Structure formats: C-alpha cells, structure tokens
Amino acid sequence: MAQVQRQNRKLKLLCKNHLREFENLRKQFCIMAY
Image (cartoon, rainbow, N blue to C red; front, side):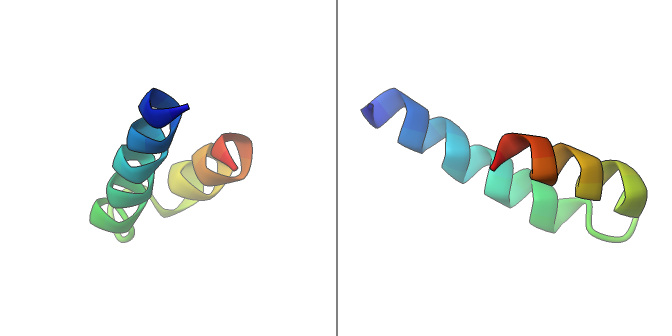
C-alpha cells in the first residue's frame, strides 16, 4: 500500500509539472491514474 501511495504522489506531481506542455495527454493520463 505504501508503495502505491508513493506512486500516486509521483503521478500527481507529474500531472502538475506538465500542465501546460501536455494538457490533453495529462488529462487522459490523470483520468486513467485516478
């Protein structure tokens, strides 16, 4: 469980970091991730 939480935190950061550059891809990725 701890590993999954750590992974989710990384995904959230990724989503924030690429907000502008990969807007469409980010939306798809985040929808799949959560």
